[in-house]
Length: 322
Image (cartoon, rainbow, N blue to C red; front, top):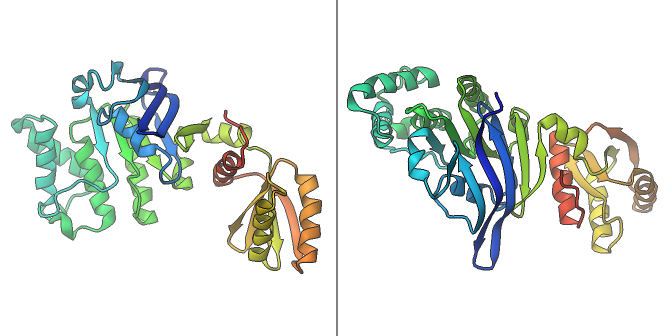
């Protein structure tokens, strides 16, 4: 990774009528960097990526990809970018080789280079042995590899991936990320949208987006250290579901408004900026409801904890943007 900026947005916004899908989003991404864009469904991830690809025009703000303004001059960079959508845009009735040849032609690869590029893509993605398999007969993980191969067959400088691992098993997701690391080692810049927290840990830098706004941005470690709006308390309780209901009931009554609770297996994680006050109040409410709090420990937050806390903090009116 180096300091050369390959993607830059400045106060990027997109309106659909009276609805603002993306609200003044700004970030910079360096060459050879994996930049993760995380948010719940409907948060503006896909709209942002489509604007960077020139498929949607922004309502306001600026985009530069490889130093070129988008969408004004997007045609100038199309040979240098690759895109893999959520749905793996492949032709199911074609074989692996036929799909790759088709995409090679679509990206402008000359016919005398096509066979070489196809074999390189097959070798990179581990598809050897599947060359003549019909795409419809491939498992989800192998279709994913084929879709990535199709997106990079022309050796792009920038790769846009829109939730590429959705619905793929964990082993295939791990193999997919191994391929991404290989690509960035060659200087390719990767912009990836995801909602998997384990994948977020593998990104060089991240941005959390909610309701079209970036609410946290930085490396995974810096977000953990600097963005957490309070403490994370791990609770072992006799009836964890009832304890979560107690917190939800207090919210509905306008009490403990900055306390939230999420179930983690058989335990609960509480997010609070005022742990001492909330612990006393929660213990009292739990006793009254017959819930035994066996242990309550202040823990180091995981990236998933921080993501949830940021979402909840925004939901309940806080403002802890980085």
